[in-house]
Length: 438
Ligand SMILES: Cc1ncc(COP(=O)(O)O)c(C=O)c1O
Image 1 (cartoon, helix red, strand yellow):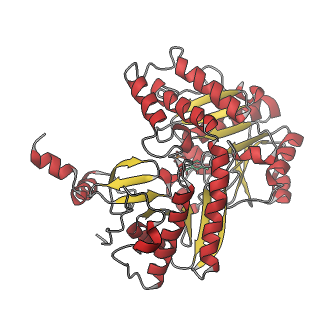
Image 2 (cartoon, rainbow, N blue to C red; image 1 turned 135 degrees about the horizontal axis):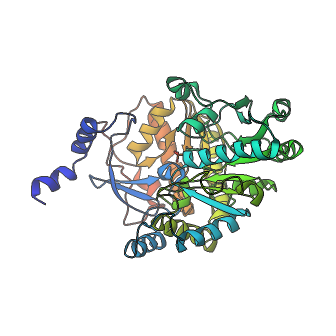
Image 3 (cartoon, rainbow, N blue to C red; image 1 turned 60 degrees about the horizontal axis):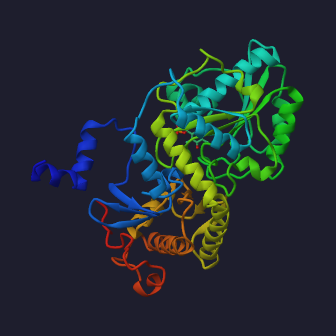
């Protein structure tokens, strides 16, 4: 590689220009590009370091460059990446064992993303409708505010009209009811209902946590009608909410559960888990995926699940999440423009006074990565390995960022050294030198 190439590769403006020229313009990325990370920290091309409190949108369960995950991927890549489901795959069978044991369900199907896991769930539910409910027009009850993905079936289950309308007609057979409203769900159940599909916490809707009895009520309702309770745990699964799966905090056992995001710790993978009777709905020829469950992805799943169990990361997420929420509540009590803090474990939504996009930008300038969900809410979803000092630092940086926005976007060129130094690992800085808005 010549010097010219190497200079261009490492130059943020050049990356932005290249992407702007050659990529579909379907994202609106912030003007920063990362090329490495360690634990809860990410470093951009210019060498600035950031505290990663979004974790690739609830994906980086083990943080960046976790030795167990790196080693599993490296080792697997040196043996074989892919063989197809024409053959038995040892890593897939083992990942299925670990995942079903973690979830307390019977069988797993592997795919490559959250939306694919939902597609599989929709197909499973429809076949259940035909085979077990005895209807030719199976209907799935879904909720207002739901987000289930961007492929057509998952999009049909998703609520947001801005996501749906440009792509209509979408598949039918979905009946929408208000979230966290058991009487409305009861009302919607009928002879064609084959399933209720719902998120245990609505992540994209601003981290909306339902009442304690909601999921158990839905389980009962589905049971009464011979319909399936399908939980979309793409965002909430794999320890994120302080339990391995969010439903386990409610003492229920759903018929099927989707997972993705945190499952591969950054390696793209999704899964549908189900009880035996439900899993039987997808037999040979009914569903498949070329890449689904390939050895590389399965090695990553194995490493993530083993580390989740061994390091008790779900318990850690519960404790760190509590610390994070009370830290943010402390900011609010101290006068920061925060209207509400909610969530479970390390999935936290914060309603802020200023526009959420401005807060995200101010956080970036302070060296803290978060994201906006809606106009007024930011989401915090750091890796589950986050340490208490890092939680405290994240809260502190958020406080500074909110103050910056309150002062009309005036950003201090440096963090207050005295207040931040106590939390700072000597070898790290957090992008505090980055205060330009390119
Ligand atoms: C609950 C839920 N379901 C499905 C999806 C779609 O997952 P993916 O983006 O991996 O397709 C998401 C993504 O945010 C999600 O939060």
